[in-house]
Length: 327
Image 1 (cartoon, helix red, strand yellow):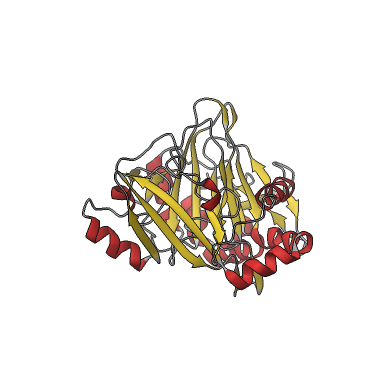
Image 2 (cartoon, rainbow, N blue to C red; image 1 turned 90 degrees about the horizontal axis):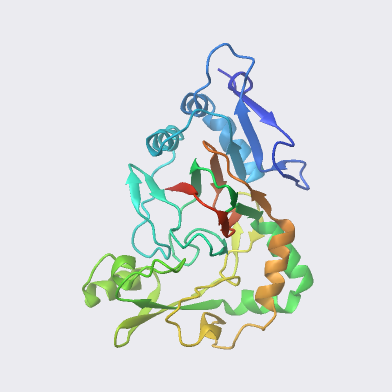
């Protein structure tokens, strides 16, 4: 079966950007209502994996809307139908999550009134997922949008507006500092305890696992300072032949336990970031992003090397978005 017989691409259903290449961002696919049978998303994905891979490569983001996906189990079936290998969200992740079923986790469990800044998933780690799935199980009344932005566009605009900073970032790299407590803090977007982060309560084992992730631990009385890096401030997307904004300049790790937030993100030589860079970059994100207002049953597929994502504060409860990560 061809993709045209199962999917219908829609323009204008949600806010979208038309890229320089003439591709919509994100691409929005709905069931082909001309068919007499109900189109199941799992069936449609299995029948058109190569076409969907090509579409994701060109756009970076695909939203599936209007399909019969109503539960975490249904969502897990959708993820499995993609053929992408599972990436287990385990050691090293910053956000608090709970495994729901199969390959499905809760999205970041930070309090709904907090914003989660733009980021590539696990960009601070040496190994990170290449594809991300999100699913709206309970749509929000208002607020709580997931915002997405093309990372290469952010890089190009930052390079044009702040060429000296970008050059220095590329030459030196960045160091991130986190402070983790012994117990997880559910009131923070990056509130995992060191025990949960490294999946152990043994400090020696934690140090070994941190070292494998390029992290150094400095133990304190009731917490640990985690030094990450130096890490490049960008990556080169080999598949698309372009640089991408692969860093935590915006947001960084705003740990409540960090006694010096200015050191959350620094150049690798220890010099601080320019005071205005984070806010300047945030402005560009806000100008370039697409804010997705979730509908129940939505499934969003992102290329983690092409697209950054964030979460706006939720105004009206409830909201439940689930996530899955792929190699």
